[in-house]
Image (cartoon, rainbow, N blue to C red; front, side, top):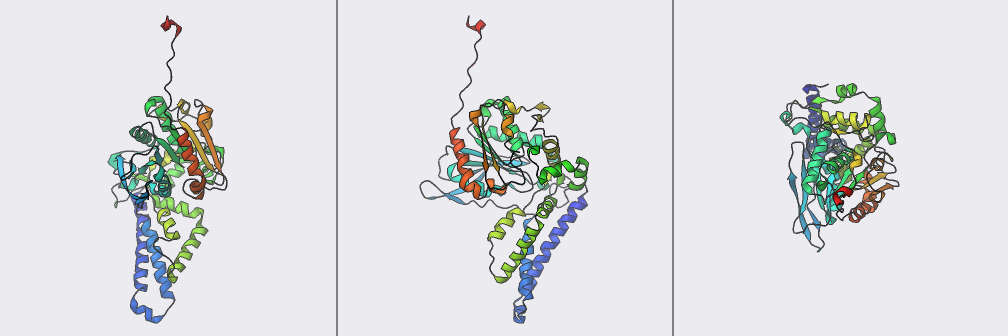
Length: 425
């Protein structure tokens, strides 16, 4: 499958369905047809509207949509998204609040590179912004990155995080959500050993597969069943001629979306059928619950082939983070080197992607960290999405994370140099 024609074939199918939806909507909406009173016509227009929107969203990057927040003075403060560090495969961006002094809390949200854009964390950013200066890793769609930019695998990802943390300074508090949790832990350990003055104040790992074997899920079962050769042959394609990254080997977003949808095909089919009926009855709106969810869910991005394959092989199959055997540029990254960064893990009791046990496994690896700087939380009844963006996050987890950050806000005391008996004489 590693050919451009397979990539372009999927894009052609997507484009055709978008065109069919637009055509059906336009034809069924002719004023003259309204005289027939045929009930099929409103259904046809509704089907076209939903279909056009659905397939159009698959190639559009969503907007952050965070225009303003209410400040402590009760007035609205406009929010600008500013680039702090610009890199080929992803930028470090800041949600800059106008007319507001720097906040005591500085938070770096590490977004997943797992099919969806960083805007998946929109509600997480919005909930933290009134109480902190917020920065986010905004990963780029691999289809738009020229082949001349080179490769991007798990080691490159880790080094990107190292650079971002260095840029923000040692008073930053890092929150890693889902997929990047193991690599964020590795990046913190890298700084603890190589550049202690740049290591973050605290690290919160939310629903991440630190040790995938700690609790089985459909994701971990798939990782064990499939061989790397099978995965490379079935999942990897070359970007087609339409995009700047033409020729780059990727795991296409459309192929990922197919996997996402198939996991809950019945639920998605029901949701779209109900939306078509709502549109036909005139009960739908541009920003109703269905469109808010699916505008984000359907917006997928390509991952570089080397990142996807190295994640499966090194994080899930070989468990290099869980076994503390991860290497960057040939040098081992020792998780035990973390001795000052406060670390908290958060898991959802009903998480079927990173099941309870996978994330809290990080605490066992922190052999150099005092117990009073370790914390964990298991949220009852929460699924994967809920622990960082849903009701559980809003009502319970967010306050716990902010309290943890505040409890570890003080800069660590410098270690006293040991004076030998010989040197004191």
